[in-house]
Length: 443
Image 1 (cartoon, rainbow, N blue to C red):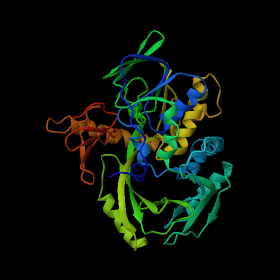
Image 2 (image 1 turned 180 degrees about the vertical axis):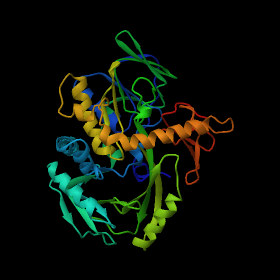
Image 3 (image 1 turned 60 degrees about the vertical axis):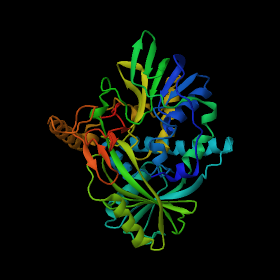
Image 4 (image 1 turned 90 degrees about the horizontal axis):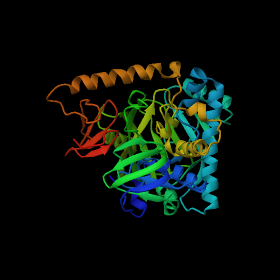
């Protein structure tokens, strides 16, 4: 189940933490968000140490479909309706700025990472209403979106909205050009973070890291208190086939229907994604479903690879970027990217760099982890609370396989032979070894 990115590029390995060290800033997690944050802070002259539990880019960054867009599903109509057009414009601006910064960085450092500008399409095969609403909301957000009824897809659509001048790239080739300048320790899981005077102490199996500031870029933050992120986020899985023998697409596509597909070309491959579900709540056989779609729409294609990814989803649809909690002024977080971690990782890195360096940002309030958008999050909060309560109740049975994070009952994912937590998304292989947090230990 190697991803296309791992199959075609490998970042050299790093050693684990050699013992006790001190730094201005410690970043937990060496995925896209963690590496970009460390990179921009180092450019500001700050001493930065990155602690990675396993391998650099070994988590969700390797599983992405690597679209860099400001088009994130039906986000703009949600923002306009629940928070306001001003919030929609800020969100669009943050992600468009992130896209431009990727292009500038790639150009200035001459990074060969298959970066190309392409339009991004959001489509529906069933109804045009939501697509029309999204196009109008995107225009309110100052994005030159346009409606169309025709695409290059091998099936007809009711409607699609086109976002021009978006981008795609090879994420590991991009990060491979940045990591040589950074201090990164692999196989160095952070087990706890505590305060000691003006220092933040990160405990690992190989020693301690003392830092003035800490950035949690570890996908899902592991501390339960403060922050209470287990009440504000859940995780979703999605699946991807890498196909050969399919035509090259001139755009990137995402379907909004329940059985909608994600499509983009990458060299001679076509990445076909979909069949997503809340972690721990698998229904059906996702890879079989995608193979049926591949056979139907791309009859001459063959499956060259397949993989899955996992994303943190916030209750109001916006990522959490900023100070971790009011009680921990030297802790910062970047999480809850909701399947759009490429563009929002860059937005997070730029925002966190501003905050840590004492500068203001127009995006601070929008992405604040302490915001309260009741109208936008009420429905998701009810569903998440019910799933968590049910998982905890079932986990109370002595015969249950329980997650070490909070004790929820684990469910079996027969498509990947893994145990999964429906409460907060921790995953374990068939032997009980930890695959994904927020749990920190194996079963």
